[in-house]
Amino acid sequence: MPALRYQPTPPPVPPDRGVRASTFKLLLDTAMQLIQTEGRIPSVAEVAVRSGVSRATAYRYFASRSALVTAVIDASLGPVRQLAPDERDGRARVDALFRKTFRRFKEFEPQLRAAAQLALEQWALDRAGLLEEEPYRRGHRIRILEHAIAPLAPQLPADVRDRLHKALSVVYGIEPYVILKDIWGLQDRDVERTALWMADALIDAALRDAAAATAKAAAAALERPKRPAVARRPA
Image 1 (spheres, rainbow, N blue to C red):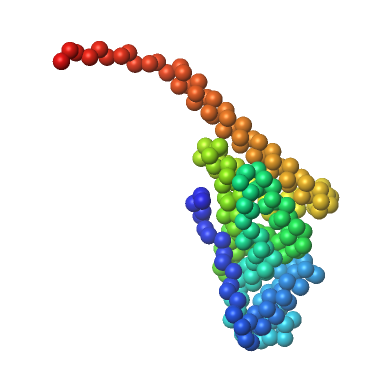
Image 2 (image 1 turned 45 degrees about the horizontal axis):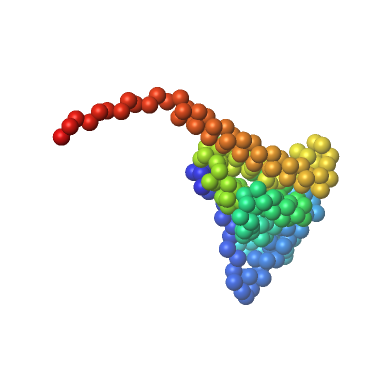
């Protein structure tokens, strides 16, 4: 996996059972519902009030909005993050990942938009020196896509594979929804079709680049002058 400037924010570990487990679930469900219906990121204090839980108790489970949104996204995309398509062909594996994941994107679009909103808000606050909480770090798609393109590794030079990995990370996520729905007015099905088309086109481009690099290396090898044979002296 490529080196990252930071690691994605890990989700809070929910309690196993008992009152703590039920309180955690109540707070998380409330946050999920608030984002779903109101399209905004609630504060931990607001989630506490809506849940009928004290603020002190809520902050013991979620110390910041970053922790809260991380838990929300983990609940939304947890099954996707554990998804491991076993298709042996790289193109088929990427296609299977996109098709299964975009169903979750459609179902939890408000939550995913809220996570992107928080990341952008915190970026601006950080630049202004006003960020007072641990930032929410996105990036789980890197590991997911690394697994998806693994079967293509023998066909692609390292630099081409890395470029494909990065390019697919732009197409895979909530970002296509924001662009294609908000700007182009597309429906969910058309967003998915367009994203699948882009992913397929990127794989084609990577394979073409790999073939061109192989042909260039072969041509260079043919043009390389051969060293004259050195006559051996008699023993």
